[in-house]
Image (cartoon, rainbow, N blue to C red; front, side, top):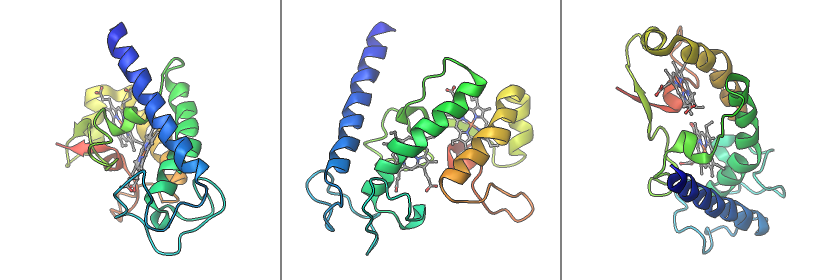
Length: 169
Ligand code: HEC
Ligand code: HEC
């Protein structure tokens, strides 16, 4: 276990350095620069003076801005939320993104417990009622807010919900 923990610490440090690196660049060069060859998610004209570009909507952020925003805003906020449920919960990028997050370019959902597509919440309640409640009452609304989205509305089928993070069974 100690070994695994050590490996994780190193990986977090590596990701942390990545965030610091893109932050240090300030306005990332339009073409993505050296750090990441993938700029598929970048959109034209999304420039901001602040790291993570809090003034630019999530959908319009470049990949680098998303990465910085995750590290600077999402991680601290969601750590606080998860600690409401379990005081010693240690939240890392991997907690949501999985251990292979870099290989899959942070695409979500990736590795989190697969929930059934039908009767999702009911099934989750049967599996772990306390967790399911916490997820729907705290995690979904807070994460939706951070992404500037509405929480999932079962009547319209729209919004950010369980499948923003969890795989479908
Ligand atoms: C509480 C869960 C959670 C944590 C912790 C988290 N993320 Fe995310 N991240 C998400 C979700 C959900 C999305 C997808 C949002 C959407 O629907 O577009 C995402 C998207 C991203 C994206 C954009 C991917 C793309 O294709 O545009 C990047 C980059 C990213 N995260 C990096 C990070 C990094 C780096 C960390 C740690 C500093 C981190 N995330 C921590 C939930 C999380
Ligand atoms: C922002 C990302 C995110 C969203 C949205 C989310 N979850 Fe989760 N969920 C997690 C994370 C991260 C864990 C693992 C927590 C841990 O390891 O302590 C988890 C764990 C769970 C578990 C326990 C799984 C296990 O292996 O024991 C259940 C059940 C669950 N979630 C249900 C739901 C339901 C139902 C919804 C929608 C109402 C939902 N989640 C929405 C991130 C999310």
